Length: 504
Image (cartoon, rainbow, N blue to C red; front, top):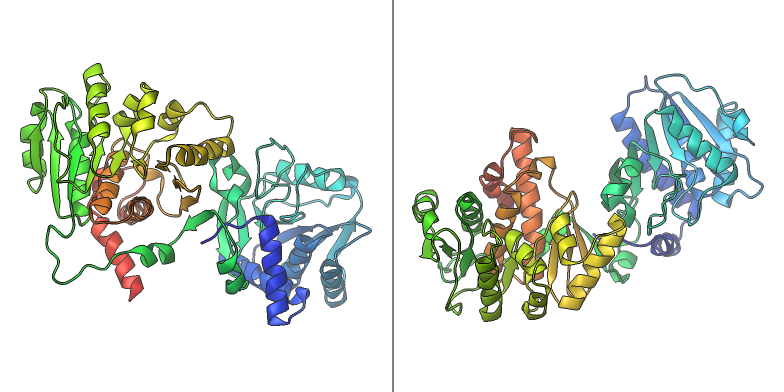
């Protein structure tokens, strides 16, 4: 699913209106119907609403929503900010509401006319839409600050008023703090970062049938990964395949006290569908690995930590390095040797990344299209401290392009950036993944997909999606508090089956 800019969305609106030969107010009605349907599904008729509307098309949406809710038997009071220049569609909907339900519209000219709002009310915010660039001022600023101070539930229409959906690098203070945001057709870039969560709340995409032709042809470098996209890049398993068909991977992992990380990554790799796995680990982990993952072959390297001298990597389709290996000087030397000698795509995680951050020159020899899977702090050790989530994302894109690698930056909407500068934000997962070991199983899963001849970028996208989907399935059976990374691995089968069943 593409993430388009505000200007692109406006052009999509205009293209839809022209191609369908409809009036712009008809498209506004379509959006209002979608929003009203969501509100009616989530709130009973006992719930009363105050709808705050601006003078533009976002305000027109809010006024139309007010009319539709009143027609359905809801108690609604519509408050409109007075303005000398209402948009045509906003003004038309204002007249419709005033004519059909006299007394339901209150036009205010200053904050002193702000109505008394009783407890238990839900606010609908339709003050400012996607066109806002600078800081709101005047009555709009007063209304936003007043609504936030009430600490009532707020449902924002399309975007929280005051939020620039393309760029929030400036720290504006005048932005609605929504409980829910009803987003039309496509997600907004600004919705996908931790620092805007208190502004956007839980967001929901409402399909208003904007032109698919326009959306498909519009250039874009930012995407929201959904089920449809993942199904489109899945490979079909041929009836006459064998274990060699699905690849042989090498996992370099583990040290004394951290063999669990190696076991988690190995089990995840084996559950990915790959054909063969060899685990290189120190001698202290041999019996543990043989007992925990009998399907895996093992190579001993060192006693309590890996110690790589010579290694023939030509037999492997992928080499994953990092889970639980530590960062001693010996391990750092081994990581450099592995990277320099690699004849296969690399998946670098955890301590491998920490070793690289202490030896920045290694970045210059990492093979192109390698996959790096840092969490936020590991990424900042590779680059430098970010001033904001948006700045960090910019650093991530620049890092992928500069070093020609794929970066999987783990978080609530794990972001995958490509060597050509695309960003893919994931749509699955929950806070149950915020536990030690989750990164190890993700490494194993992505490496297993690379072994099966998925391109590195597609392996990263599918791996992150399946990992999150399995976590969502695990959450439905347990809960986010008690679920473990090993539980997630045990639900890979249902995650993969879910995609297959949807395909049929």
